Amino acid sequence: MKKQLLLAFLCLPFCALFAQSPAFVTDSLDGYIRQGMEDWKVPGLALVIVKDGKIVLAKGYGVKDVSSKEPVDENTPFMIASNTKLFTATALAQLEYDHKLNLDDKVTKYLTDFRLYDTVSSQLVSIRDILSHRIGTKTFQGDFTFWNSNLSREEIIRRIRLLKPSNPFRQTWGYCNSCFLTAGQVIPRVTGKAWEEYVQDSLLMPLQMTHTYTSLRLVPSSVRLPQPYTTSFSGELHPVPLDHWDNLGPAADLISNVSDLSHWLLFQLDSGRYEGKRVLPFSVLQKTRDIASIISSRKSSATPTHIMGYGLGVQVDDYNGRQVYWHTGGAAGMVSVVTFVPEERLGLAILTNQDNQDFFVLLRHQLLDAYLGVPYRNRSKNALPGFQRVMTDTMATINGWKARVKGSAVPMGLDAYSGHYTNPIYGSLDVRKEGGRLVVKFNSHENLTAKLDYMDNGEWLLQYDNIEYGIFSTKFEINGGKVTGLQTRQSDFVEIDGYLFKKQ
Image (tube, rainbow, N blue to C red):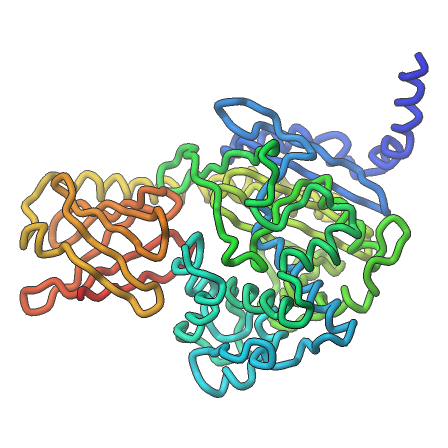
């Protein structure tokens, strides 16, 4: 009886706050999430909502692994990927406050060998530029070379100079993971501490984020992450390997859970305080929130948003008249979103273990609609048919390619295509004959391989052994009756543009 009374007493603040939440949250949220997870084939999801300095909800749904059926809860760790970026930017803004650097300092002041594609941009580029994705490159440019590769941080930074921009310097927003790595590498130059150590000491420890890790290798063996999944290129749940990207650590390496992320949200919503104690001056947070790059100034047709910009590690939008700060994160098989609305003292974090779905962002919109007074419409149900049409078309294309693999004679024989190929940004790959087909080994990645099967009319079916990278039609480059190159593609999730490798 005493235990029941104690539990009832402890529940009072939470229950009262939950009862004051919008009707969608109190009456419909669980059903909406479960139906959405079924519709979008999401095995597991974790959600936290904070409001007015309190946790309204911290809960897991579904499973970590469809085989073991182990449930997701509020303490389940996920790779939060690019939600790492605001931690990195906040650390650098703090160092500016401490007079250790200036965000408008030239990058070359700290990394003397750093270069962009052209000399003028190399001389001008600042820490603020690389934290706000405005060096002129395309979104994800270079990421196929860098993502999960065996390249060191130093080598990635060296290869940034090979990324030819498609837009003028400082005039266009293009999402750049290697830029955030570069920014993070400034931290040891001014503090003597590695990025991992500095973020741990200055942010994670003061915020009591005791189950947040700065690297997969630092996760205790007793802690098991969810199995990552994708439905890309197959239409069905397919397990994929966990990302290993310490080489991009400051851009993407944090692993956390919604319980710990509630601390981060409360800190953001209380102007740099946590549990009443000042962790950082509010001016440090303001530095990250000031728009440095304009993404769009046109009204959105999907949400009540008119202006989209990017600060330092965080996106800045309006949403039905309120200022909203948010970021998504995408790892192989895990996508997430973290959002906070200071005017409403509202924060959300959603973590999932299936990357080919829009439900995680639709749930974000649905919760913002509920809290910010937007009339209800079922965003998940409205968006699902369009997504399903795209998947149907994609699978029809892939199945059409596969049907064309009929063992047709290869025009010049497999030996003509075998050999060593190079690309100035990526490095090299080797094509070899194996079991009546061609196999590709990408040498800047420890375990990345693909199969090449001849279809017809000079086209080949390229299938990566890790389905996360995709299935595509491709061609060899032929000049003067000789094979001179191979055009590769990879999932847009990795990098949008393909690579041309020249045969040596």
